[in-house]
Amino acid sequence: MYRYAVIYNPHSGHNNGESVGQKIEQALIKNQHKVELMPTEGPKDATRLARKAARTGFDVVVAVGGDGTINEVVSGLATLDQPPYLGIVPAGTVNNLARMLQIPLDIDQAIEDLQQVHLRPLDVGQVNDDYLISTMTLGILADAALNVTQSEKQKWGPLAFLSKGIHALAEHQHYPLTIETPDRHWQKDTQFLLVTLTNSVGGFTNFNPEAQPDDGYFHVFVAPKMSLARSVMFLPYFLTGNFKKIPGMTYFKANEISITVDNQQSAQTRIDGDPSAKSPLKMRLLEHKLQVITPNPDL
Image 1 (cartoon, rainbow, N blue to C red):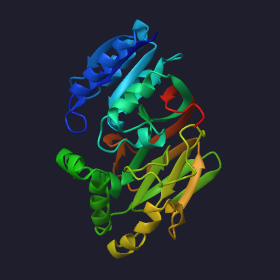
Image 2 (cartoon, helix red, strand yellow; image 1 turned 180 degrees about the vertical axis):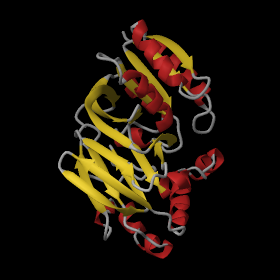
Image 3 (tube, rainbow, N blue to C red; image 1 turned 60 degrees about the vertical axis):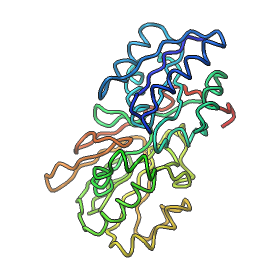
Image 4 (tube, one colour; image 1 turned 120 degrees about the vertical axis):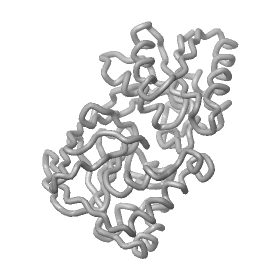
């Protein structure tokens, strides 16, 4: 018997977080587990609730929602020396981390798998005082995502982000960046920078087949300047998992990164879909920081 704290955003995905939370509660109680439902009431509330659950001695903290909700839960657990296990029931619109971990998007199956408690290690990125579970963008990808409404995400899913990103490329905004790692110095103008911990970006799961959520690295892509026409031509690279092969694309792996925008402008980033830290950025990889429940222990 396990003690589960179920943290859910009532407004995730198609505003069905409340019903999903209740469904999880019923299934866990039926199998003799102890459960406490913890609905969030506002931004960053899931972080507070995750810390509370850990202090209270729960064995598993379940994040119900999309990547933003999972990020908030992880932000509450990543500061702890011995955090509870992390469970995920995907109820968002993109669900990058769940896709990577092969957690079913079918709610009933995800709840069933949650009770098997097959564990695998999960890397967590730290970006200044924030945390990263899936992706961070800087530049036009981050700017474009600001224009994606919740209704567009619910209606179009990953295609909403892809469409906005392609059109943003036509604006030719660029950012002069300096990137430092333990063995690399990179300085150049770019239209966008993408850092990922998984092979799922914007819901496209073939994005970077090399990336694994427990491989100990940030996977970094720095794009060349691209016109709208050129970006459309490179779309097949994105969809088939060959993003790093785009001519002019810089790709590397690192577990520590420093990023500075060189023209004094304060470029906004988005971490796991939400606005987050501004440059300069100090990033470090917290290898195997959490244990996450997955359907298959051999993944």
